[in-house]
Length: 282
Length: 259
Image (tube, rainbow over all chains, first blue to last red; front, side, top):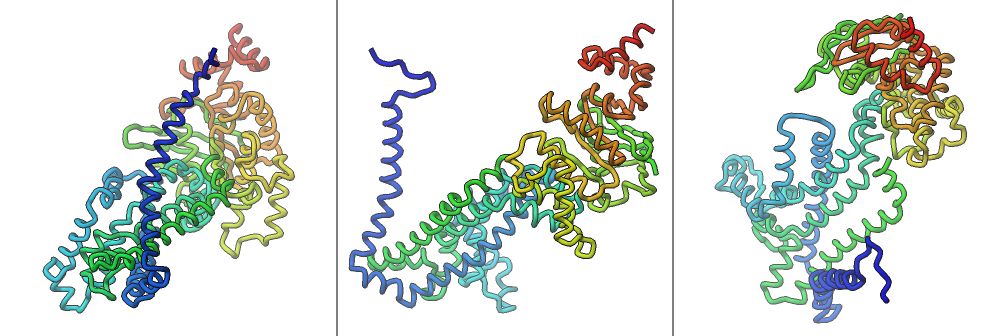
């Protein structure tokens, strides 16, 4: 006779199958490609791979990518906090519309968002003649790349913070004000500490995406090697030139930056587990 | 020096929370705002605390035009229903908050803040728990931390929103007696909101019965029981008190019925 199963337990076969499907899927679609990237990078040997990364155009691309991320991520952290603060803590007309707007970059194709900037700031665009007159270069230059990156990565921080801040309510802020705290002191001492983990998570995701963005940046950058090529664009250029192992070498570096981001996040979560759970429950 | 509320009105987008509320309470009063949910009692409390603006009306307290003072300068010690303790701060940091956010010129020295925190911890009988986080405390303990935090700013007035609402019956009973004693000791004008008739009549030396944004009657508990001004007050008090486990209150009601 078989032992009857507890009513809340699934049959072991179901559990095993589901686990196997999940693991197989992750392995096939996530881990394997990543392994291939690193493997192919070393196709011509480690020296060749390192040389591909040290080459001037590659270094320029790495610098441009890091610069664009270094500007776009803090901007989006500030925008994200401001938007979530407004949405979670206040009631105002048009709130639902604002929430929808925040999701816009997720739903619009990055290529379209890149084109928008070309249409606005490009030479033939609305502001083009005026900008040319005043010698301001946005399209095919760093400002355009930063703008496109900011647009595409805008939702990450806000999306992370809105549910968190809504959940926490405004009681603590009200308490702070009634205890005599100014608006700034309330934000710095009460709001910010309560959202810091969500904020960090949003910033890390935002950063990973900012460094990896291809579509929007591709439209506004103009693909000038050594000048306006970011890492993803540089990788594509190398690939199109049949320099496969060089392309994979730079790709490995980009993947590595993303992996570091993930490891960093996990480490922080593990180290501050207790504090994080305290921030979520009262 | 007394608390005088005159014709306070408050409208939210879809309904009128307060339709002209006036009352007077002497300095040092323990005033209960009693009423069913939606009667406007919490709105009135939040207006006194500066967390909500009144549309119309006037409040004077301690010789001040109360409603014109910004919330952060009002020094109204507010205890929230869910306590609203700062979850990322220790108990001691929570209590010290009101002192630490003062402008540099008015801020006590660090040692003085520490001493005050210790003093308040012992006042609310939580000695030795200063290093804990709110999540590590029981409901009753959190409630007392919230009270200590509100008292730290040397409030002109103490405002309590359903102070025992989130506690179980036994703890509620204990805290009630303790709070009454504390009020007697400190003599601080205190306004508290409750929907519990027994609680209001036992704690308050003045009870305002509210209904649909108006005050039906205000007076000492004995007067409310013996001479309810409106059918609503009579109904609202009688039902609850007849069932009350408190023999004093029950006999009051019975004496009245016999009369």
